[in-house]
Image 1: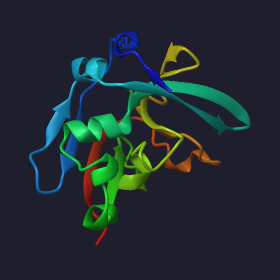
Image 2: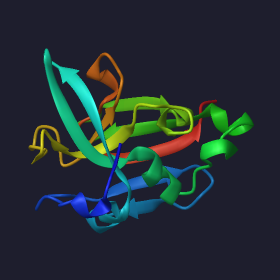
Image 3: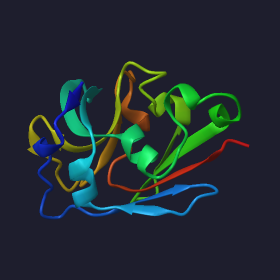
Image 4: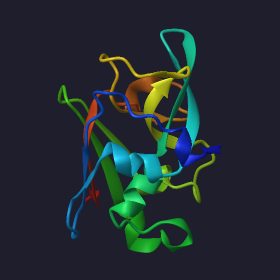
Length: 152
């Protein structure tokens, strides 16, 4: 489900996220950049409790950085992985196809809100939430960088 970009209200402590796609220049997405990108919602169960997260579609951020997407994402591009890095050193890895709405019904988002409220310091300012996962282990908290590169 896509939300209007105007629904984004960055928190006072929002930060930039560096996005690196191998073979291209890195970009830095600022809170203002996030305000212009398409948004979505993803539900995740953690600790037995369900929560609704809202944020920018991860694929939209990756497209800004120059990834191949949609019906052009095939062949050699399917071996690319998205490495999500958190401030505490945690790393989460997804295939590039898993982030693309052309291949996946459940959205993967860079969340900035949980149950209608800005993310707290424990989770935010950004958390990648993988909609549809049964466990939250790929949903990295305090995300500060995202890298796309071939898996091998």
